[in-house]
Image (cartoon, rainbow, N blue to C red):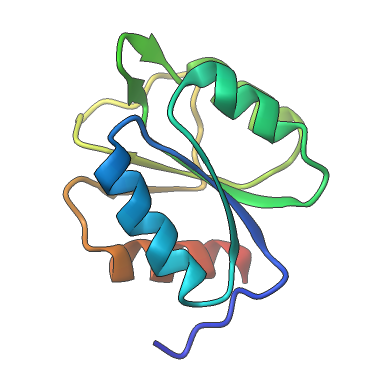
Length: 117
């Protein structure tokens, strides 16, 4: 991959540990700084980070919905991408991009790089 995300901080919000690790490793391989969150509470703490460049969000976090996270990211003007297996995105979530599960990590990296251009 000829993508360079050095200097970019990416939040990966995913409740499945193996999926989160695979995505984080792919992003780190293109020199991004990665923060991961498995719950809505953890994600909301990371959104306050001033260096946050973009977020990748799984909408269904166990029994929690990430809709509140979408609103906060939009309020802070942080671009975000929804990564989901569900066909419907809640009306309050207006993502900059959507990637349907399952997707290979390289596809996710390319989509995030496109958001940051």
